[in-house]
Image (cartoon, rainbow, N blue to C red; front, side, top):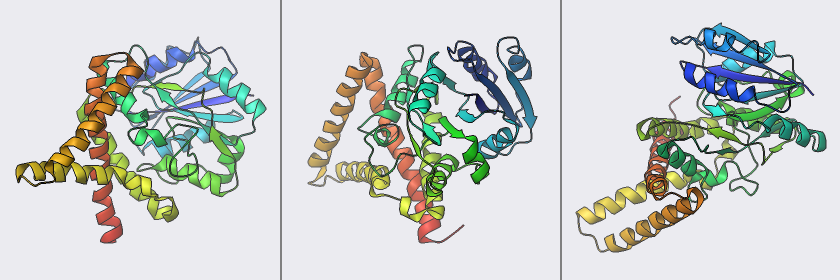
Length: 323
């Protein structure tokens, strides 16, 4: 089985250097790497070409179109039986391809996804963000687990693979942003292809390095969920409203305290319980009080940013019917 690893890149030369280094350590070696520079100003050509004696790697530069169409560009050039997509801010464990190869031999999957985790080298903020994005006490609980809330498992493009047959049948992504990977995953399943989670095929996903960038990313994710609704209305589940309801509850609690409402004490108690759950669960998972404290901040940023983005486009696209 030959894999084509596809990495869209936009102004992140340091990240692609770290990612390519991890690929040189793979125990399964039947793969090629396609790095597609999506109209970047910060060119990574020299970095990528510096790996040509260590990897079967090819570099391409194209005009900026966004990640979805950049992956399509790579699909047309790929030689593999299976196409694997990574975000450029991922580090890949050395046995990743070995795990995927072994799993696909035993379990026929047309598409798969894998979870993400925090690497020991990550900063405390990155570890806190990783915790928030994978925690059962946030929306992370529905992303990369065997037991999911909200329906079928939909692989995400930071760690996702598809067979050549899927590419030929679907023609790839039809969106370039705002939930392009979720739309693609749902469409793959709707065409009768089998997809699933490979729990051991994890990557170390850096995501954002500060809470400001994290807020912007999660606000975008909230908007993306409404964009998916335009194509697949049935995929808007009750669980997707949780961040918006949480955001409204936090706003109500702040107002209740400011106006001395009787319900303020109850609201404060519920938030305090939630904060303690986050703190002790993260402390147990990360063995660090500092990361546990930052995890509280990350969880509130995640839920509020997603909730505000979700409400913004829910009002604009569903209530007001704006395109």
